[in-house]
Image (cartoon, rainbow, N blue to C red; front, side, top):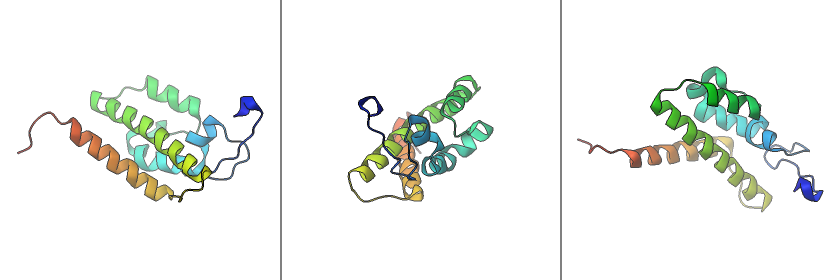
Length: 121
């Protein structure tokens, strides 16, 4: 949109200049979701700066399972933030950060359950 000369505001918090960095990490709405779903997993690596977050995730030493979880949470949170932003932009009902966090948690649980390879006893 910016390349077309259109400046958009953040529909999640009202910030005048919506950038990728702001929308997915620095926006109070999306950062609250990040903190809720990935805070314990990422710990001190949590940062509202897009570049710092990517670098810390890429260079961190995670166990194989934690690495899968980080990647899943990362991609799912970005998708859900984008989806919520578009819902608001197109005048659909809004969700709170708590509601969106529950959606991410439930989706993560469902996805992880579907990945189990051993039958449950």
